[in-house]
Image (cartoon, rainbow, N blue to C red; front, side, top):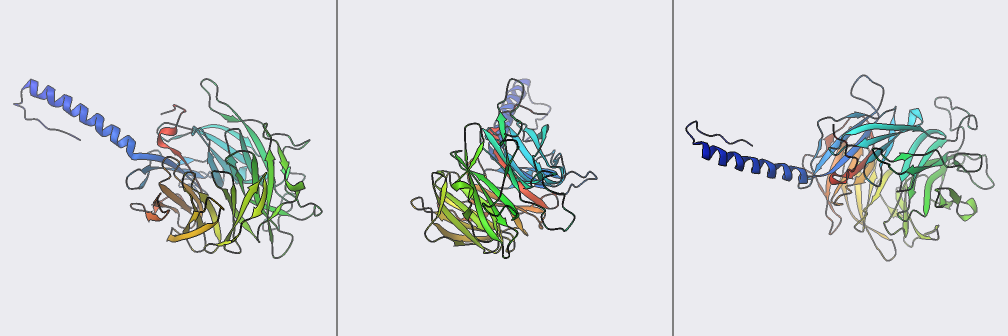
Length: 420
């Protein structure tokens, strides 16, 4: 914005115009700030440069059009190889990135401008971490395999050598001039993790796929399948969470049946319902929650597109969304608050092979998918009245090669006070 004045203009006029200009520029600056409703963090497996780390593309979301635009400093190194999952802290001050090939979780402090600043790195108890969930007290991390030497190192293209596990990290509150951080993994007897195994079948290989902690914080669920039988058999392992974060298996350690090959798990904000996508059967298995125990809902399962890979439940409105990787689509559903049943609202095209999905945490008005083979991000405007989707302006948006995960914070939610 610029105003020009003739050289013959009187000083008084120039001064008045300068004050007006300053006021207008301040107003423009305020409008620009309010137009950025969220920062979205998209992890990609491959870096654009020469280094071997993955990268994090950072997008700002326009509150009027939903347009996603990378911030000037984007992308940022993920701090490790092959980032596959990420989650923002509940206070929106940190981003935690799971780097599978390094068995690490890298914490970044989030600046007020959305930029990422490396803060801390911890190693996971097992091998090949692949999913993470978090609440205000704990972080729950899935490892594909249990630790070495309990689990022998797999050879390339060999079958899984052993079952997976879940580890729990306490969240240490921020002190003066520090950020929150992850403590040491919580002990499970003499272990630092909870093995995933079937009662009476200790040698069956259980492959975990996703983890979800209820909004209440009382229970954690892990979707998984038994690799040792063909066709596979799907399960949900349930755990109660005590105040320290330690886990106790529900149902005597017996998991709940979950189709053939569950791929993603989500829950509603009331903690009354849990939803699991079945990659093999192209549907959603729905459950009610009673003291942590899962009971299949009437009408379940509900159909999806082919190879559903990710699911998001709107935290404020009664809608759910499933990304189907083979079809390159997102399907929208309404949720019956009385019984948890899903009703399909419509299906929408994404970029090629969506593998992650998220809803903006500021207004719940925008939705986005990370499209693994499309090397891009699809953006949608979410109608909060009827749950339908509309393509955001100029969607899809270019990302680094092979994006794998999404996380987001509200623009005004950053509290770390870091800006460089």
